[in-house]
Length: 143
Image (cartoon, rainbow, N blue to C red; front, side, top):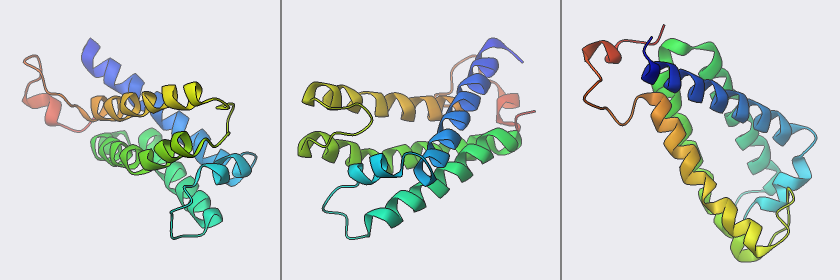
């Protein structure tokens, strides 16, 4: 495994652990905090949104960690998930919702810049962008 592959592996593993933890938090000790982040314009019950997104995070995290041969697809799904939940982060900033220690507009605004980093990390783990150093072997499943 070269350094690029190792980097992709470690980023994917870290993201897998992160979303697995976040998913468990959605369903247990941080439900109220996550409930506060559901935008008011969502036409679905807040508790359902929190529970469903928690289950999705657990499944994505488990897939990232337990199925390395499918990490490319799990990572792409994770990037799409991070994009899908971004409007909630924007709503938290626009509506001035305090949650997870984000109790000022400055903190809520700064958080918005971390979502693209998560998307980029997931895409990196999936093997994007391809570079000149990548060869046909990089299309093979991870070991």
